[in-house]
Length: 505
Image: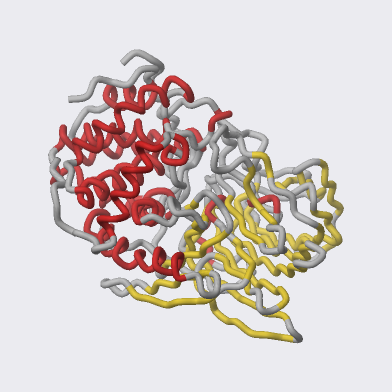
């Protein structure tokens, strides 16, 4: 997700953005100048993490016993900041979502086939599910089951046995309602299923909100594969994560089928329904790229076409693109979201700027292929994406990275004071600028300590260590120390948990 900074700091930063965009019109320069503690201890919780796996794709199967679901085997946790969302009893493996959207009556009719593993033996279990939706039928392994739906909790009253796999099928309908977001940001206040005045749909759901439109274990430590069938009156089409496997028109309705061949946390799932034009492209390394923009929207299409250059630049910094494809969809929002293999961009000048495109694509390495197990560690995602964005901005404006970090440091002190340390922030201030700029400054300080070669080798290696996984803070920080041969406990404690910004070198 992008930072709210430029949306709120006023004319000075707006001028900087305009300058960056003006320079970028001429193209991406791959070279440039790129050389450039009081508080609580950093809690390195040794909690569960996702099982490391090799690449696998289960195809469109709904069979819970399919061995290809190995990449989705997780050890879900109860979130330390938002414990009311998610249930560690459920380890989801695959969501098959058949969705029909009526834009006139604003009604969603859905069938969710949820393949999952039980992590404990219990007499009942639950998923997160939106209040605006009503269950019309439910089965567990083809047997009818009783459910209760109070608030956002969908309780399935059927026993499950530890390590056994099941297929839950839920039929439902209703008008989805977005969830309140735990933030004071100016560019979003709700998450999840959002309906425009003319009946179009878009979703962004960090830190939660996927449950507003399908039953889900809505916590990042639980990754799963996804398949989507989206039906809506033509000429509208449905957009989702992964690759479009078919697009047909039946009785005046468009039917779009999508397959996500990588396991994803629920907050990284997206849905958009509206009138779209499809444009295909390819990166220099052969990554298939697809842009979904409103018909005739040349401005948005031009911005999306920057994806090609951004992927090329990022592969030089972060290594090979970690997925099989990358899409972009532009929606009626003020924000942007790094949804996996199908990034969701808001239709604003800032959100469509090249630096935001670079930031959101960087998340495919940091936040998507590897994701946090707990929302206290969102700094892992945003700090690295923000630092990479800073390196990019420095190259495009002819400044040094030190210059960019010096500018950011003038703001970081206030962000830390307002929302808390990046690794111990106030849960009511999710996604505030403290989780972006403090960790970005931290990475620059570590880069100066390690040197460019060792630093960038570490940055490129990490996304390959827990592919499709959810490593804990302890695992990440311990790995960095092992990889670099440095004792960094005090360094990380100061930057992540300190009430004040550490002294910079």
